[in-house]
Image 1 (cartoon, rainbow, N blue to C red):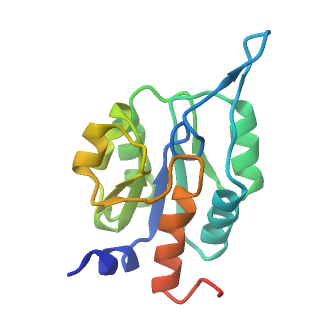
Image 2 (cartoon, rainbow, N blue to C red; image 1 turned 30 degrees about the vertical axis):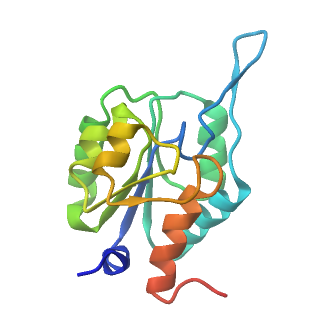
Length: 166
């Protein structure tokens, strides 16, 4: 089976936020609030995946309620923020929805994502991910975090399944 065929078997997308859906930077406001920047194109793809019937899950160590609101407005129902042990949350999601791990694509960028990436069928990462994450990724996007890497993988899956309009 070639690498492209693996994308066609995906039924669930799981994404980290900081460094994947954002560019790894935060703007620290005087009151301590952290502002993040997200790609509109990633947002379009997330919404499209949900509309096409894919399960989309977010597991993040960050706790931004603005991120939660943004993702829920895109139709993402499963948003887990402030998660210190991602593998525990991942296992809960797999059990809750009785998911076949071979059909799960996970995109992470740093060490907190490592254990989950070792479990899924298709571990992926942005172009600017940590060295250790790139070493275990089956696919490294040509796009950096927050700059279209989520759209990159979603578009591949939907195109292979005839669900992406051109």
